[in-house]
Length: 148
Image 1 (cartoon, rainbow, N blue to C red):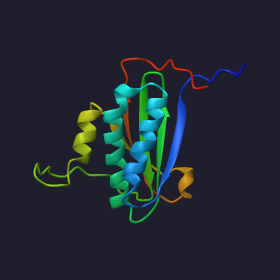
Image 2: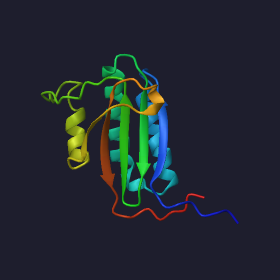
Image 3: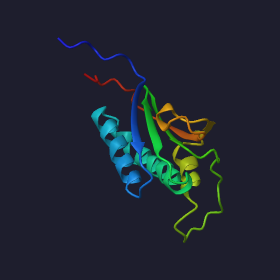
Image 4: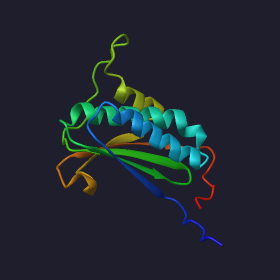
């Protein structure tokens, strides 16, 4: 009989190259993890937040890889994207007709303000000075599904 999986948190990590395809790959990665754990209620918000975080890293981290770190806990998930740029994201004036400027506003709305930045970088990025931008989403149904 397989041994029971330890209680969450469970970490999942994806390295994202500085390519236009990285946001899509990151969304699919997060969606696959959440579906496998039965956390479908978080899919839409989590994939949109993932897309915004990874897109910002691709656009603003000056050609460096980024690292998506997803932590799943019983009642919440935390998405963090580390990149090689120490510059903190700054909200811009939203242009309702433009293509840019909505990312941080979307994070604010989708996470009820549970997002922020942390200095430093993940070990997976070779120690470059950088930052992590994170957000948290909560679930109304605690994670109980076995991971084995």
